[in-house]
Image 1 (tube, rainbow, N blue to C red):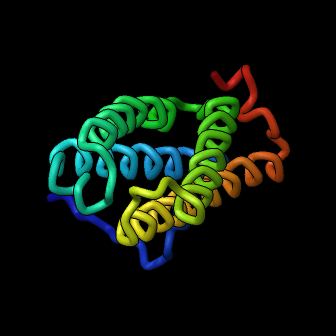
Image 2 (image 1 turned 180 degrees about the vertical axis):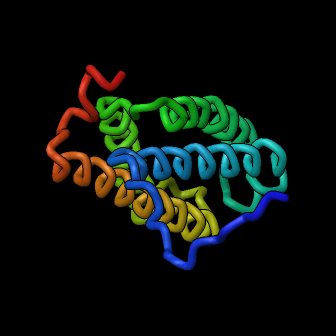
Length: 154
């Protein structure tokens, strides 16, 4: 007869990898780009009209976002996460935020009020992702791995 003994002592979870936050933020980057891109592609003409942009522009941006989403997805799955990839994603996100806020503030005349609001909100969402990426990069730096986990660990 086999007896199973269960311990009443809580076992702490294994130490998190120092690049976990960066990996998750890259995954969030990928998800937001993919979803936003699919909305622009699938919504097509009605969504573009509501925003006050040409349907071809909305669809083209949607396709570009879906294509770009593959990069941070792949980067998020690699272990250890490539710090340079994280920095590239962060730079792209900062550029998106600045561009979105500039477009919302002084965008082209055809842009509707709803379009300005949606563009500003997209900038805020991407700013959240960028903050998470920055915190992930900072956690690596604080763990003594500013360039990511050691090459020997790869």
